[in-house]
Length: 185
Image (cartoon, rainbow, N blue to C red; front, top):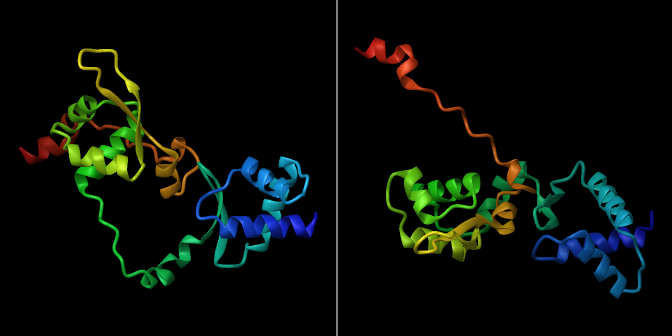
């Protein structure tokens, strides 16, 4: 394995402020005069993963590509470095993004039907501003409501590659069939 290529990939991933796709890595390396195949880039990333095995950093593949990041077990150590607090996600916002993630594409009406309450415009706007959701089209019904889906930024922020990486929803248990009700009566 060419050490110059490995170190160049490491530098690109380290210096990037976002995840980088393999094809982007190849384009950057080729603009530097290095001709390289995607398989060689992947092998170089594997070498870097081995290099970081016993350190506090790792190379992580997320929806938008690869990035260098601090391992999760060290996140509490560096959390004190940032004094700015990102706004907490409200319960309503968490319910809304969860419904979109699991049932996408959905309309605002679909979300309201599932939640049983009105979805605030602010919640949808916040998710759009965070670039966690986007409009993927419009349902062909009167009013043509927007269809919302999650974005790669949502997956990146949750440290996931695919929407299928979300945890499975628990099975719905019919409470009437449980002895709990009979015991309560």
